[in-house]
Image (cartoon, rainbow, N blue to C red; front, top):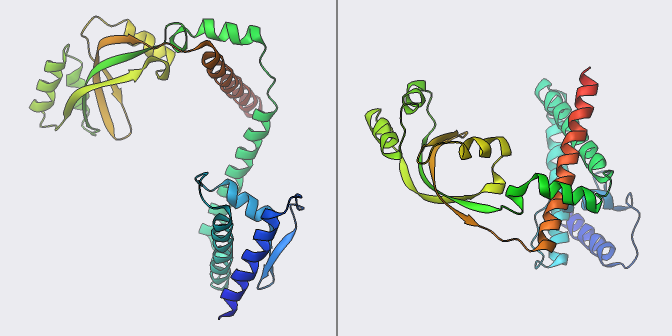
Length: 260
């Protein structure tokens, strides 16, 4: 058995004993050493948080896999350092970006956790201000045409003169653009309020264009289906949406202050 395998097995055993212990171990506690580098419980916990693990998966197996992942990364990291990659300009730039991204994520998490608990009045007002999410919640049936996004602006320009889906199809065909057409549906609550108001203000049967990163969707509303939401569920949705709204406002305000 190689030294590396022995180390992995010993580390796995240590991690499993810590994971199964009824008492919480210190976050900085060393569970293994690899070529002079410590592997701590805090590292394993951070790795575990970033993993998408099904609840049904065996916890002991998960810990073994997580620990092996940390060990392998440290081994490969050491090999990269021996090649001097940690001194390269590309590495230093990417490391600085990764550090800044992590700092922003942790800062955002801190600000989110510090949000005040909304009062019943806050929630009632939020629900009244957003009827499309609650009292008037519905699904919109769409007749939709999708085609790959193109750099040819003449296609979108020509679509401005199309006032029906058949005319949209004719324009795309004339420009040799391949497209797909079919029925679909979208929850009105998922559409930004400003865009939803524009859609609702269109004449019946008038198409609207929504460009995406890879595809352009041209749609027309063909029907509306009310979606009932139980009051308890509605209030839970409202609390989460209210917190998200408050969080976005706080971060936006802080960013404006920092810019100034």
